[in-house]
Every structure is written in structure tokens, then in C-alpha cells.
Image 1 (cartoon, rainbow, N blue to C red):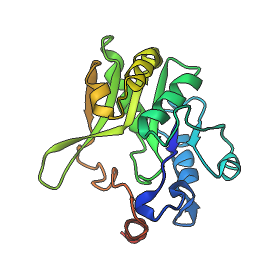
Image 2: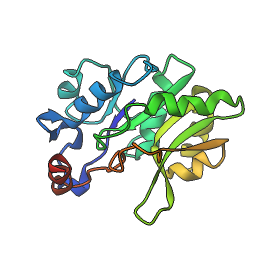
Image 3: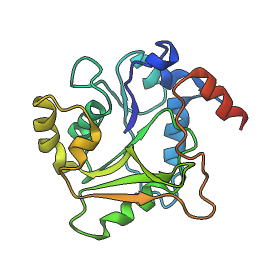
Image 4: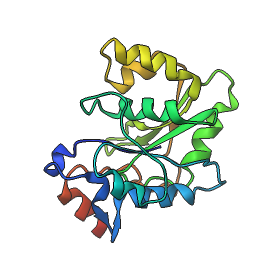
Length: 198
């Protein structure tokens, strides 16, 4: 599930997923990068968007708006994906992080070698050397839908408050050769243009 359902408020209200990165709309770039994932761990792709649906549909994948109202954040995208997913696992990737790892799916999937794992979440090193979770890059079991529905119905909106209720494994992307910019997300047009030039 490519998450493109936000308001784009830090980009001046523009639809972030439709902004170009090296000549390709961010959401389409994300779809194409997922299709090229090492090991072909990706099943059917879906997009989560809440406006300009026809533009997103042109990218060739089903487009599903949030089932929660009021732009409820990434968890709304998680819920939409879990409701529509027809495989045992759902992978979520935001549309605003165009350099995410080409082996994201396979490395997250390896965390499920432990049968108790419910969620695998990417983590990356910050400039200060600390490993920081990247909570919108998740691979999760689809049976978590019921838990997420209960969490959001009780007013929950923060990803970490929900994931801490489950066996969540952090998967570090800090090997030699891993791109330090892999999880740089572009919240503003200036950040997007700077990443293009880097």
C-alpha cells in the first residue's frame, strides 16, 4: 500500500504524491520502485489517496480513500490497506520517501522467520548515530485489522502507540552500502528539490 492520503500541509496544501521527483510523480515513482523490489516479495499494489483519485488511478493500481474521516493520518492508510489486503501480510510505504531501499520488502519479511512477529518496522541511523524507527515503513500481519479498528475507534491516531501493543521488530537499515538518504522524506517542495539534486 502506497500511502498518499495526507493533506500535504507542509507542502502548502499541494497533493504530495503528484509532485514530480526527477520527472515522475512521487506516488508513481514509489509504485515503480516497489515493483522492482529485490526478491519479488510484492503482491498486488494499492494506493491510498483522498483526492485527485483519477490522477492516482492512472498509475495502474487500485486506489482506495481512507475509511476513516478527517485525514486521520497514516493509521487510516494502514486500516484501508488491511481492509483491502488479500494476502497474509501488508507492506506500507509512504509516497514521499523516493529513495527507500530496493530490498525493503525482503529485509522486513526476514523478521517473520520468528512466528511471534506481528509487525516488522524499518529503522535507520540518524546523524547522531541513534537508530530511529521509520514507522510508516511496516510489514504487518493482516489479522491486526481488528486491533487497529479498536484502537482508532477509541481515538488513537499515533502509530507507535498502536504498534507497541504488538510484537514489533525493528529492522535496521544501516549496513555498509545502505544509502544514508534512503529514508529522507520530502515534507516541503524545497526538500524535494534538494533531494533531486543530491
